[in-house]
Amino acid sequence: MPVASVVPTKYWHTLDDGRVQCDMCPRFCRLREGQRGMCFVRACEDGQVVLTTYGRSSGFCIDPIEKKPLNHFLPGTPVLSFGTAGCNLACKFCQNWDISKSREIDTLADSASPAALADTAVRLGCTSVAFTYNDPVIFHEYAIDVAQACRERDIKTVAVTAGYVCDEPRREFYRYMDAANVDLKAFTEDFYRQITKGHLQPVLDTLVYLKHETDVWFETTTLVIPGKNDGEREIDEMTQWVVKNLGPDVPMHFTAFHPDFQMLDVPSTPSKTLTRARDIAVRNGVRYAYTGNVHDLEGGTTFCHSCGEVLIARDWYNLRAWRLTGDGSCANCGTRCAGVFAGAPGTWGAKRMPVRIGA
View 1 (tube, one colour):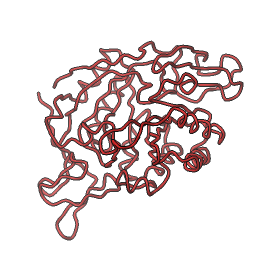
View 2 (cartoon, helix red, strand yellow):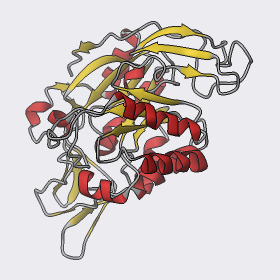
View 3 (cartoon, one colour):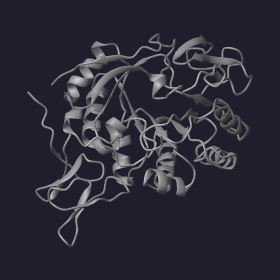
View 4 (tube, one colour):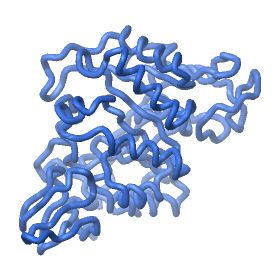
């Protein structure tokens, strides 16, 4: 049976003027009958906000978990990844813009019920399922149903998100997630307002909530853009805030920008800029700081914060060395490495394998 793509939602209310306000994210779109929110996938139908893309996807693919990026969550394992269409931010630098900015239902060529997704993950040997390519906040109901189906099959779920969500749906959503990578896109309100058409504080609220009120394993990613968010002072303030508010064990990824979407006039990020950001993070007490989207053996390696031993050496998405005990402790000094480990690492490597699931 085909999956019904339009389903009711609960995070909305009716305004005095007859419009309905979506309360999923801080954008608070106010809609008249037939209008869609900025995210494209939540719309006003019959006087209520509905999700119009339940069970629909822009494609399914098996990736290495390190690509999300998650370096401390079941390293080396394959993750079944998918997204839908649309997004609740408007990042000028979006590197998945063909999906996240899509306004075409044809983008959603594949479909799968939550049970079919969980079954496929089991059948193909995936340890987890990731909601990625665009933000799962906007397909909240579908993501939660998939997560529940996965939990029944002992499959973990991963949210790759910008963290731009309101408090009540945030609490419901992360009740079902096992891990997350949160984009901390910059550390100034001006950047968020001008370049993402959003605000910084809700993202910080999500990070603090994840750390202090959940058991979700999470890491952060900052796409470092020349002239926009790469200043030493901004990186210094960001990493100090992370250590103070989230602690030293939250891994931070600093990744390279390449010209895309509406920022084709901005140059790619030099490797030395990423190394400098990583150095600032380490200096401020971040124990696990990484560079990404560049070939950097040291910047991709996990070191013991106590004795300095190499714990996990990475060459892009391939694991080249593993010096952790079964419980995730340093084989040299016994200090625990923060993360979620399950004995020996996986052996998926850097492979990317598209998958067709069907209804």
